[in-house]
Each structure stands twice: as C-alpha cells, then as structure tokens.
Length: 80
Image (cartoon, rainbow, N blue to C red; front, side, top):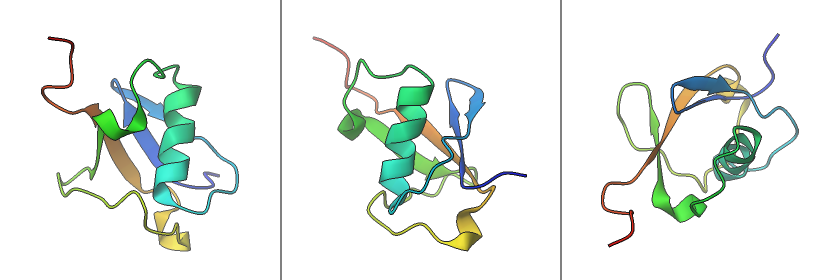
C-alpha cells in the first residue's frame, strides 16, 4: 500500500511517506530520503511521467497517491 506520490530520483523510486501539504514538500522529502541534498530544490525540475511540468506549490490530493513524478536536475545548474 503506497501512501502518497512516488518520485523517481536518479532512476530510483522514492516514496517519502508522511503527511505533506504540497507536492513540493513531498518532493523535498524524497530528495532528502534519496540523499540528493547537494543542490537546492530550486535546481530540480519536477514533472509527470508524461513530461508535463508540475507545480510544486500545489496541494497534494488523494489523486496523487501512487502517482509517479520525476525529479531531475535542471540543465545548466552545474558549476561554471
């Protein structure tokens, strides 16, 4: 039984669990759980499996239970 969204981070499914208010809060927890904390959250893209960008400030709903989202580093965020 999955409670909440599933985030794919570096090819690995990450389910932060917990009671989060927004999609962004859950995504931040997924990054922490997957030990991807070297870059700030603002440098990550959040999108659906279909490729559609997702608004991290939107509230989580029951429809997000087991929904899959990708978290990928934005292009051009590396050091110069």
